[in-house]
Image (cartoon, rainbow, N blue to C red; front, side, top):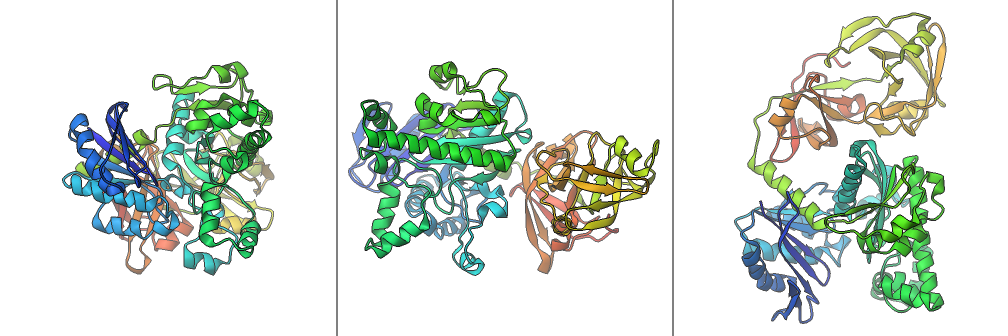
Length: 601
């Protein structure tokens, strides 16, 4: 398969024909100065185009690129802002293009350019699917506490003010590359990814999902960048406006005259700044120190959010190529168990053949990696995934739904402590997954605020005690329970369990179970999904219709096909155990059709 990837920046266009399986570039071109005598570069040769503007430049340049790269099966477009609506790659239709246009005000330097590229490419290639891949989509998994600004709720709702995050394809790509290099599943890792270039952002990636990122509603928040200020006291902006700067002047200052350029006074190229700093330029030295300080500050903050980190990843133009900046940032990270190796850092030269380099000592608890990002390949693969969904619609059986009330899993040791030495759990009712059963025994769960009586126990015994509760239960007990897949207890709170014989206090293990679908390998093949995939679940139920996002697919030979949600989620959609769903592979969703049968468990 060949995918044309189109990345339209505010004043440039990057285009490449890519084989998404191998990553090979069959042809590529770059167009600079799009608005003023554009110059196209192909295979090192430059030529001036006769037209200005993204659309006209693409119309003139693409035929030459496609003649070299061959016919394409799809076009993948980078779109900087997807707002709250677009949380996954989406096939472009006229309606979708109009919806993206409505988001232009959120990223006025980028989205209009993205749209110009989309319109021109759809006109040139009307017979192949076009897919939008959004910078913001990877961060759509951030919890509400990470997306909200502390502004009046009504004001934020009216203007769509919230944090979105950017550089999503890069953060997602290097996170997976890090997992592959470390030989561990991404869903088992806590990563801090640092995309450092003219635009810069950090992300906290917990078990494969972004839970925090430094950019916000726009790409202006967060780290200091090439020409962008990053974090600024809002009072400063009010002061400058009251002092006579216009809104447009302030916009220019924050986006085009700040960051490394503003502090150094010579420009935004770190190589030039480092060269001048070596000869004693104090402004350049201050710019370098400030850049490193801000990145290190975010790494420390995200380590606290994640409860530690398995790896820190540097990528982007600066992260991949500046050993000096990596050295400065990695100082004082020993508290994370990151034992930086200066020789490895200096010797690192990332290439297509060697895209990952470890910068820490062999036995470092937290790894520091430099990884060559490939946003174009990430966009090509995401686009291929949408094309595959549309062209290979599977025939699959309905999915039963199980609504899971709060419950506890116990170790044998804790069974004895709660119910007496040698006690064995008494099966009351078998449940759907093989070998599991609801027990006759009950326990009291005691939190810092209140207690919940007669909480059910699911047998058989497990290697670790786990308490699964809903969001409502979380506030009843007074705990902050993270959303986790079963068995992932790191940085989760503890409670006291009280039984008829005694009590047990666990230090951690209280979670909100991540909504998920159990499947056999045959089921997964029928639905066209794999273990670890996330799908959306659309509930078609009249006035109670809604869409569940981020439903984890879990595949195992012993599983029985079933979707698991908690009582809060079920109440929101008026669902009961026994209702069924049908997975629609064309949209990557599960469409639920109501069918009452049986009580909740």
